[in-house]
Length: 172
Image (cartoon, rainbow, N blue to C red):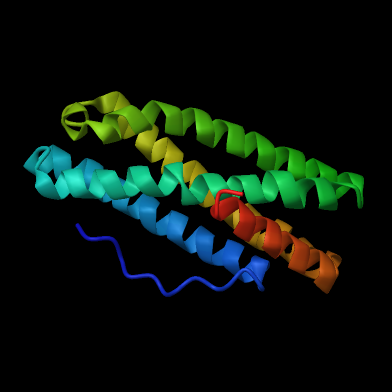
């Protein structure tokens, strides 16, 4: 049940590529979460399940959280000023983040105690909903939002966003 190998992330000097790569990692971790649910149903909460649960928990409480902050603090406000259509898209994406956060908050405690997943139909349903919404959200961002970022912002703005992303991850 190992997580798929993902290539090295791009640097902060290319924030759009970094956001896309983060999307791929989110998808990988959703896949791992779905395999975890199936594994626990078949094998029980063994060491492999505990390891997978810890990876999913760690990823979605750190890297994915930073990713949403990147968008909400740096990108949405900057781009939403350009037009009502972009503002509406940013609003919809922010609503997705809120729903994903709510779902995550119901999943996280069980991932810290993997035995709580076994036989837990509510966890399985919430995990499926979380992964489905994550996939739809990423598809919307990749098709609609990130092209706007790439083509609407200057190289200086992108550089500033990259610096903000780096600072956020370094705890500053």
